[in-house]
Length: 409
Image 1 (tube, helix red, strand yellow):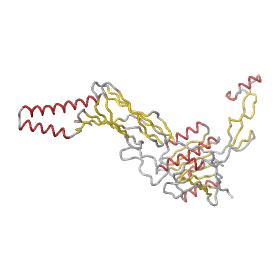
Image 2 (cartoon, rainbow, N blue to C red):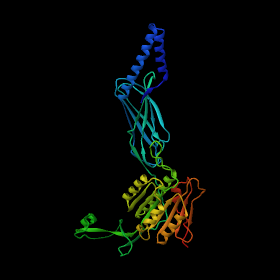
Image 3 (tube, rainbow, N blue to C red):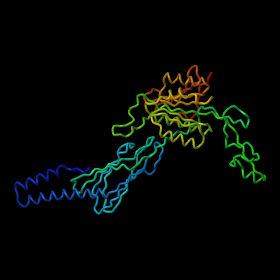
Image 4 (cartoon, one colour):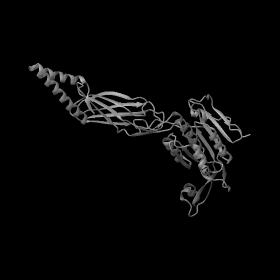
């Protein structure tokens, strides 16, 4: 948008016009034409400079971990034959801690690179930009304001703590005995080599052993019974505000929601490293669900889901649990990560534990809570254990160490 940069130029033009018409003479007329000519030239100059100025705004990476700094570059290209005397650039990215502003100038047919960074980034898909640019002519008669919104987005993945301990049922290797429990092959443990038969998967052939023995031998792996771990993320908040700000941009996620996601992902990653099958459920802006799986691919899928989970008021984790508890297999471990504890939640978890499930509730205490230390408790008369994480405490320090878990006696 082109506008007067200083109303004094309008006053000077009007004064010179009045002077030339009332007093007359050569000097007042020359003064009026000089002022009017400069304003016309300045207007055309600024329009020419703006048409020949190219701005590229981009981060150094399209994905980072939460809490990491984001390095960005603004590339300016003056493709015209006139200099750019003054340009002010302001980064209005919603994810920026504070707006970044810088002034620069460019010679004809020259370029410049401006490097800066955001101190940290929050979990989610963050928009880069827009940039607000203000250009001015050499004497500041006019200013031109333009917006550049081509920075795209960056994906900020959660940074789950690496836990060394969490009370989950352990995997139970049992060889090849026939059992009623769900079993999977532990491909890290070879139990025996046997002759390969037609129709079997060729990928099971051990080529080195086959070469030594002169016949095709197939590997047979240990079977293991692993408890399926269901991690539930409670991102429901009846007091949550509107998810969209007045300018149309998404509002940032509250800190308690980030802590719930970080704690849940840390538990899920620990279970996956232990060889468990892990399923993720969540309720916030909408319902989120990831079917049970294990291994590196499942770990990547949990991280991706952690980026997309948003808090909200439209879904309640207890309604999800009550409606879909039949989908949780027998003897499964259920870990609920929540920032709130109420009677309805306790009753639902107690009903879940009576079905034979191993139930742990991780209570991420909100900022206004009065907790000062990590606390393990057991709901009386049930097999539900509650771990409370105090406000502002590190997730890894709270979950990643062995503590005395209350017994069921």
